[in-house]
Length: 317
Image 1 (cartoon, one colour):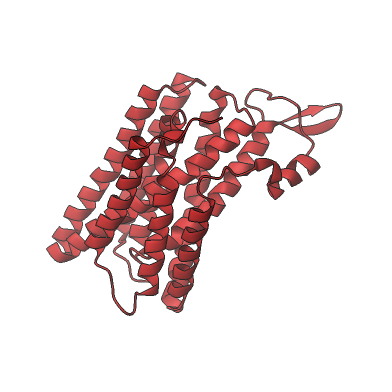
Image 2 (cartoon, rainbow, N blue to C red):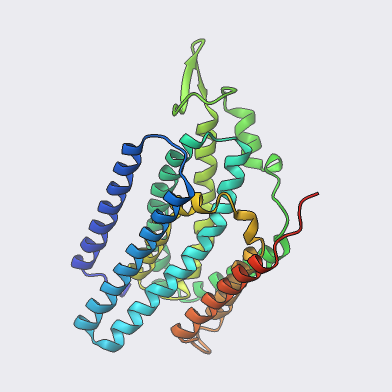
């Protein structure tokens, strides 16, 4: 596996992420369990995006200094494109998180804890999948075609399912959990389980965390192949992924009150996945320039967001 990731770069990246997470957790704990306001979520979202772009700019400059301007430009563009793709796909995560939180009526003060656990789990899971994917691609080039076909079919499936609200009542995992895990009827503060009558009972918060974890797995399976169409460098893949995931909690609170306004965005995400799938399938015939890929992804997401705002969904009857 060839990578630009020197020990210095890995240490820099790990240091930035650890410090950012610690600051986030300390400030969250300092504020105590509370309902996150739109203003607070906006500032946090802007902060996470600014951090990612600052790292991108620094990596762009550092790579140019060490490897030459051409390599620096390539690395900077690959990170930026990968970050945009992962950030866009993260919106789909949030729509599912909203559905789960609404279904289980998660108290506002507990949402932050669930999301922090979900983000940490997502980072660990994605790191494992990325290194596994990079290893397989280095050994078996034909896996690119498998990834490409998978993303193309996933995009088509997303278009067919767009506009249809999933029915959590029919979710097999949820039905199994509620049928086999002894549960309390109500939340018990931040407790995941309690002992009652000599038996251990799990709270709805425990079920929510399990569902969020499974959602992370499902979306990681979609998003990891997508970024391998942008670059096969494990360092760029992991760093752009992690920076996109870090802002997930803030983005959730930013969008939770207006998710319905972006009703056309799932179509844009589906088209992005289909484009990336085609890009992978054509890798040995024609390599689509990274700048063109960035432009297509940005234009697709931007257009569907603009159309969603210009053409609001009809009122529910």
